[in-house]
Image 1 (cartoon, rainbow, N blue to C red):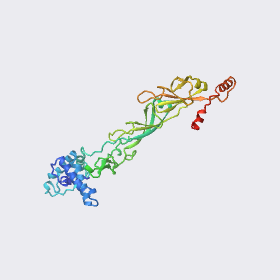
Image 2: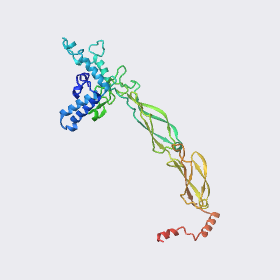
Image 3: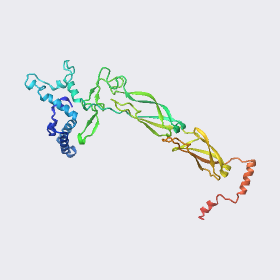
Image 4: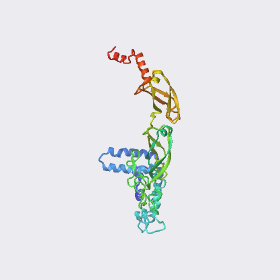
Length: 385
């Protein structure tokens, strides 16, 4: 909105409230008028739609204490006769052009930028300045060894993200120039459709949500105020991370604009497989081969652990192939600092070639157990016995 429109419009008259109306009275009146002239209640009625826009515009100013005060101050300058067309009191012989008042320099007077600069500061002072913008989130990937994933690791990550342009310090304007406030959103970076109770805000299309327009862009960032920045940072990957897990590191993403908070860094972790150990949630897994005599007679077996001394586990007599034993506290690190277990799966090894005394002993064993048919129960079940 131009300064001329801002001053000439009587927002109190638009809402039908006195100039000393309270905030509550203004809100109550607005809601009543908004319901009456809302486009949804007057489909196809262009006059009602325009009326609704005027009502919304008036409420947008008068409902904001700071903007209302600025509006009253600006209008009072014209109401007291100091800037009336035709000179003081409106009776002088000279002519007055609102375009001159709100335009830029008109001949290099002492004011430099004309009265438009003065009122431009008045209309924007403490009001709808562009808000800080949060930095973008950054995505990256890292590959860890199996051991690093289990115990945690600090790894260097090289990332490319958007940061304030160094040449123009993030303004987007060429050196020696400055951007100007976007006239569409008045520097807020957003525009509203249907104000108040029916407000719907969206980024301003003219300035792309920045609140500023660059007339002479920076040659490096081409007016965006942002440039690609490569950096390497040390990132701690927590213990117990799993393959394909996505980790969020708050505040480690791209830098914000105008003092806004930085974005977040999202790291997708890939874990290399281990030749011996596997992973099942917080537990590690390992398959341990045992001989037939060990499985049949039982005994003590030695089992390796990840990055630690081996442990000895008791193997019960008659252990079947696939039996799982548990070594407590030898698994992956949990979030609370404790560790999961090591799950040991027994695999009975059958010799491929048997000779000599071993062959003789096995033949004797077969004769001694000839009456024990391991498949007898299977056939009974098949016959329904």
